[in-house]
Image (cartoon, rainbow, N blue to C red; front, side, top):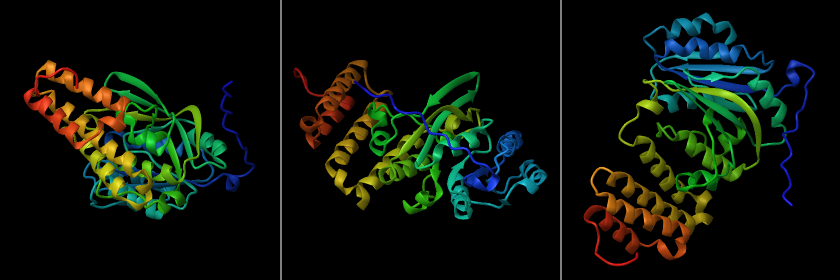
Length: 320
């Protein structure tokens, strides 16, 4: 009989100093339209041991005036040119003194009571994972954290059960630094990269069935506005970096198979614009059979065959 997972154990604290210190960083650049609502969603938590940091990239709109308006309640802020969102987060992480860390972007929101819920459930765990509500552009979608692991994240595009969304994942500051922090060379999948490395070393996750944050979708957001497959390309870069790292060497054969699977996924993606439906059907069948039996199916020869199927239709032969 399967045992039900025990709910997160809550710990109640008597005074403000008893509550674990939590650092929230808001990276900001020219999003004055949303920034005040974001700041208030964090300050209005009423959390007694909060460190709040705002790193602005030299905004030219109303952002700096808004930050100054709340500067008495912000532990540290700066407005100066930077190299993008990841660079801003690296600067915030360098200053973080909290036990727990996360960032809330300047167009996103913390849900009321989120920080208290996180602190009450966090004791003894490496990660606190809750739910995130995507909203905006006339749509809403709730994303519940589920089955988080390093391997699950890497195989997510191939059908793993892992589900996650950054605004509702809280990590220990010390552990983030131990695994190397954020990679400033990444602009789209830096959170994915960090979380894979983090969970490989610190895998203990406690799940809260509670909406902790709201993620805003709008026409100017990177998530909505990205074109050219930048998210996918960076995911491949992360995979290549991980495969070459010492920490993941014991996963060598599996990562080689995974790289091949990602490459196949790319072939499928690009073929949508240049191949006939029949070619896609054959390639899809190949991919399905490969996932079922990767030890026999993954090889340079099979990759070459797949490429030929997608670009020329491949040789006329039965089966695969």
